[in-house]
Image 1 (cartoon, helix red, strand yellow):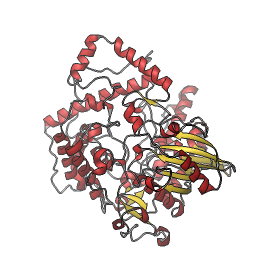
Image 2: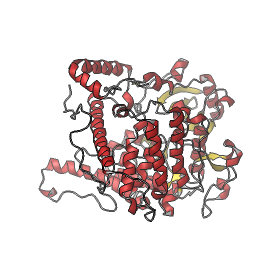
Image 3: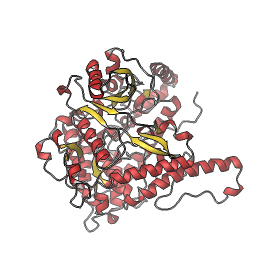
Length: 583
């Protein structure tokens, strides 16, 4: 059944050899860290791109529940955070009132955080009615910020996004008894349905169109860091502060109704954080923002630390960690915040950015003989944050290779091998196809990422990304990133001050061993997921697949030698099998 060879997993307390890395080693990016700004850093599994159309007269439970897949472990918890009861008839009536036409049919599409009902009206028009799932973020603030953000980028910056026809961010104030948004449908087709069929020229045009749109976002420089809202949706204390920096060229009349309010990011509200008295902003400086991440986690870990459905599965295999270990590392992180925040004004600038620019969130259509972006959807989770944490290469443009080839950094262009002309035709075609993919990323990076990059980008951003997730991912990613900061201290922003971080040779060796173990376990886990066709957090697309996978995994475990399972249980007392309930 398994056609590829599994990575070797040693059942010992530590690898037989640790990497030969010293305190003065070169620092390179690790897979252990998230790759985007603070917030919901790990993306839950995505549902299929082509959901079935469903009749408008389905029972209410169908509308309430998640029906686009199953989870092989922690399923009841995953389903619970996607259960959204609401008054279905009242939502249909709200669509009728706002559009002037009854609904003829509805098609349900489920994403990570919402249920979208694609409504075809009796007069032929199409609109979308979207219900927020609990997992999407805090009540009121998530919807309120998304609606204000979409209005701002559409009317002030000229960014093509769907027009909001009506919304409700306070569930108790309208009859559907749920947070919802009614919006116009995006014209064109989703990019994920055509991307693989487009010519290289078409793809370059789309990249150029995307850069043009994002450049409009960068024209708005905000006076603080947090989330964008209508003034009427937040407490009065947030309304009086300036929205934009004094030198802003945007029309004050067009921006008068907006303000920066507290963070709507899930990381500031999930689990018990929502009821805690913690600093959610808005923040006046990047230093305040970065420090609040650790302050938030320290307070929550001290009082409430517990497992979460979106914990890294490998975390449970690395042994237990005390609250004190986490808090100590978070305090170390706070001590180096002044050194890892850039001084460059452009890098520090508070900017708005799309939080999840994947192929499914981009709509395109052909105009004047070329493909261009018609609209960008799903602005839920968009925040106002430092530019150096926001501007990154979209996932769909990042070149990925199993052969180890890569896109060079900076202004250096990808190159074909020197012996390209002498290679067989089939190999030439493969290399050319890969080269085009690299060039697409490089075209984007040269126009967006390189102008907004800073020295030691990975070293100064990885602690920020790790600090907000130590209890989900374990404290190791943060400790490794702190060690990298210590190595590069003289190259950072406060070289005249002594580094507050101290790592002995023994500390370094222990971290090297832990990192090697972490990579070994992740390789093994990724292999299992790939071999059995399982997505993140054990998600599978149907009950049929759920039953097949569960039976197959059960057979695999049962077929393993007893002594091997016993040895694994001794090394990993909290459970060695990754696909099991943890909550």
